[in-house]
View 1 (cartoon, rainbow, N blue to C red):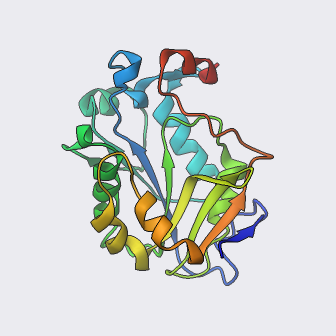
View 2: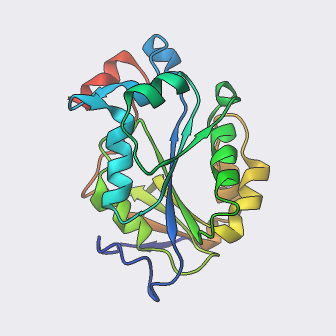
Length: 212
């Protein structure tokens, strides 16, 4: 059965403290239902949304952050301040989230990281407390963990490096890692975060209220 835990937000990286968890932010979306406004550049508190999302990963304890860019990648580079981040271009971003996940995991292949903490740029209601809880679920490169909201799996998701090849092989379209996580549900740790975060996506113009 899927195990459920509620970790503290200490961001200590796991029980033994071993293994680096690198933040992986998927920020390539073109905002088709937002009139073609790239999600990374949506304004949030006076700055591009991608800056906020990177800050959340860093506040949760990820010293290194890889950011996958796609739509308007050159504009994101020019307008967003992302010092120290590894910026990963996904030329196939229009194919969906799966292509961005593959590109991000490929960028980590020789990084020495033990796990990737994957978050989405368009969920500003998920802050550092929830993200740190999921990061703290890391135990080994075989760890699989995900945030849950009232028991329903959501983001961020933590993928130990032992799973990267399998996830990349199955990530297609907009499904991301869903098929892989379903297949490996018995080994997935759910970390309840509904008390400290809102998992609202920004997909339509009506959703822009979540940026206020």
